[in-house]
Length: 342
Image 1 (spheres, rainbow, N blue to C red):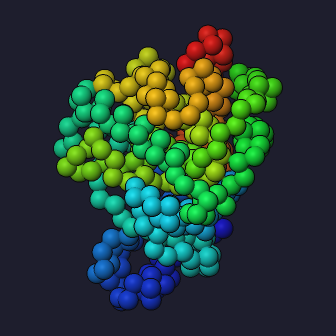
Image 2: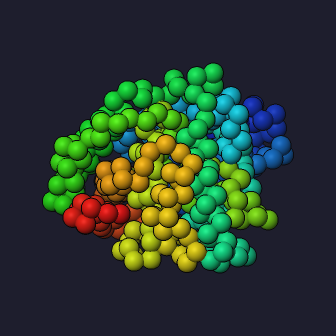
């Protein structure tokens, strides 16, 4: 994968597909995000989003642009309305250094590490938004799988076991520091795989900064972004990952970087589980394993990005602090096991 981007060649390629002149196309990289790169493409025909992998080591399916494009197509076939429309997939790496795809640009607000300017979200609004987020996750978990073809995206049998094994292996491949607590969590997860399996379409990275809110109604969700890790598997794994990102006010500051769920009005993790299980299969009693797995997964994702940064594949200063996320997530997982509660 090339570490230089040829915007001239990209504009020529896009011009042929967007039926306009290359000089009429503007491409700008969007800030935010820790994984795949997103670019805003502006032309006389309107705005689009271009997605391509990050520089450096590829991580399994997470940066497979063709797969993410197929997921968006499958979601439309399943009748799902809260995902961007897929437009175009390019497999030829010479155009932009790696395969990429174009999708619909969705206008709206995204909550990152602070409430966007001009947006009012107080306690009542956050309570409504957090319930809307859970409703959105439940809707995903209840999508039809067979006729839509979504079932072909994954192998639900043995999913939980494969996920634990895979993420443990990824951690040790990306390891840079000695963190005994996280390694103890890895051992515990491998020794405590649940017997019960549930099957659903899962997003695998569902949190506030992957949601686009309606500009005039920010308590409701217009679209869900970043489908690169979506698959067919155990929805409680998905819920566990969301809970791991769902920081509360008392949590370590470093773990509040990824979700504004710690602000007043949001559901607590306990309330979130109660609300989810009032609408979907499973039980709160099962969630210790899945929450600990979610924390481990968050730690591994941060570790992978930190390793790419330490190898010089990114100069983004945010990535330097991710090793502290890895450490904090490991400690939080151990505390959860010791207390036997989220």
